Length: 168
Image (tube, rainbow, N blue to C red; front, side, top):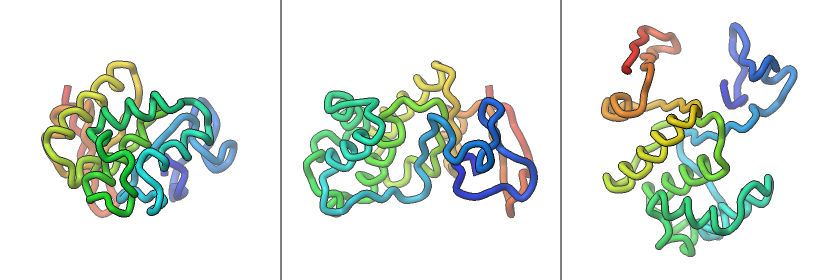
C-alpha cells in the first residue's frame, strides 16, 4: 500500500499532505524491494542498474559501481542477470532500492538467500540511512533484523496488526 500498488480498504496513505492514488500516483522518493526482484535477464547487473538510473538521472556510473561494491556484487557486475543466484538477485534488488538515496525504503525479506558477510554490510548501510532520518520499513521473519534495525516491530497475522513493540 505504501508503494501505491494496492489501495487500503480503510483510511488513506499521505505524503506531505498529498493522498496516494488520489493527489499523487507515485510516493515521492520512495524505493522498494518487494518479494523477488526482477530485471532484464540478458543484461548484466550493472547494465540493469544503469538503465534504471538513466530514468531519474540522479546518479551515474561511479555511484552505481559504489553500490554494487556495497552489496558485494561488484565482481559479478558484468554477468548476465539470468546467471545470477538467488542471493545475487536479491543483492542487485537491494542495490537498486538504495542507489538513489530514497527518503523511504520498503524492503520485503531483504536478506533472503544472501550470505552473512553481505548481510552485515547491508545492515550497516541501512543503519546509516536510519541515522540520517530516513524511514525504513522491513518485513522479515528474522528476529535479528528486528533487534538490530527496528525502532518498532508490528506483528501482522491474517492482515491484522496483533501487537506493537518498541525496540529501542
